[in-house]
Amino acid sequence: MNYNMPRKKIFVTVGTTKFDDLIKTITTDEVLQELSKKGYSEMIMQIGRSHVEPDCTKRCGFHRIEVFNLKPSLQEDMQTADLIISHAGAGSCLEALELSKPLIVVTNDRLMDNHQLELAEQLYKDGHLLYTNCKGLTQLIRSMNLSELKPFTGDKSKTIANTINEIMGFA
Image: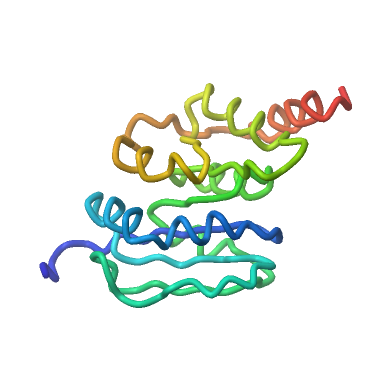
């Protein structure tokens, strides 16, 4: 192990929801190995209302994997992360983007009216994030080039809020 290499940290969040599929997928050896190949060795997971107990043993190049359910603010976890992997909730996405963090959004295929997918698609089209579902996560990580993402500059929150309102049919 090269102790001189910087340790890159991932923060995974599902917000206040329950997204067991993401928690189970992100902790598979296959996904961890791909993340390790990209230089990541630490992962903190905020698992919301999940009752899944992910495997937090050191493995696949990860020397630290931690988990918690909920806390008042995720800002510190997001600020210290080198990569954020998130559910497609508008709040989580905007917070990550406003902190100028590389973001992978994983959409929940189990949601009936998946307006989150539309938001992820729009932010992807604008070049701000990468997105996939749980089945495609390993391949996305394998092929990702985070340097191609465009910074989320200025106050685009109003634009995003308008997009959300259009998607929801409020505009």
